[in-house]
Amino acid sequence: MAMRTFLFELDDELNMGCSKSLKTVSEKIAISCMQNRRLFA
Image (cartoon, rainbow, N blue to C red; front, side, top):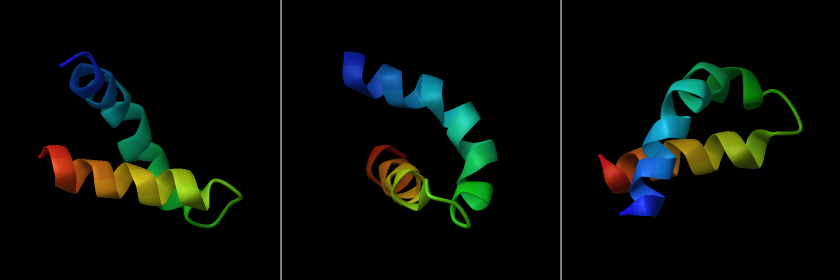
């Protein structure tokens, strides 16, 4: 449950950064973000 809450707390920041991160070194983070959104939605 704590992990789920952690992901949701990060969701706002990651959601804004996902598309930008896809064009940067943080590509893996952006992909993880989108995969996590599918898993926990």
